[in-house]
Length: 127
Image (cartoon, rainbow, N blue to C red; front, side):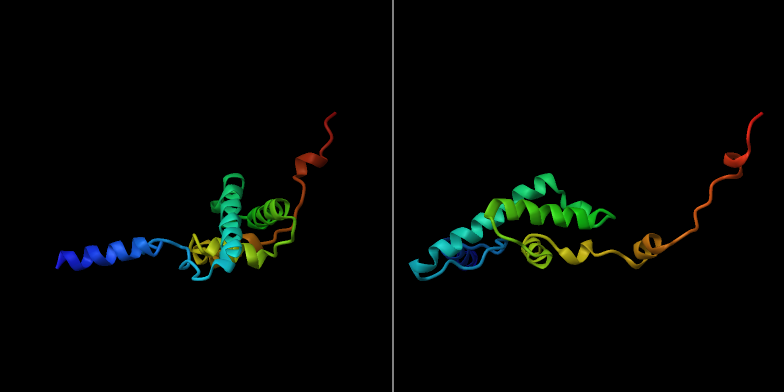
C-alpha cells in the first residue's frame, strides 16, 4: 500500500508541483513560458520587498504605509503601477491575508477620539 503513495508522490514531483506549492501547474504550451517567467519574477520581487516592508506590520497602524511601500517597490522593479488589491492578491498566494485584517477591538482603539487640552501647569507662570 505504501507503493501507491510513493507513486503518487513521484507523479506530483514530475509534474513540478507538490501539495505545498503555491504555484499553478506548468503550462502545456511553450508560448506561455514568458508569462510564467514574469509571474515567477513578480513573486520573487514581492518576496524581496517583504525584506524591507515586513508583512507583520500590515496588521498594525502602519499597514497603509507598508502596503504603499510594497506597491512602490514593485512599481520601480517593473516600471508599471500596481494597485493595492493586486499587491494583496499576490500576498494572498503565500500568506493568509484574512489574519491580517484589523479586529473590532483594534478599530475601536484607533477610532477613539479625545479632545486635547494642555495641562494647567503649562499656563501657570513662575515668578
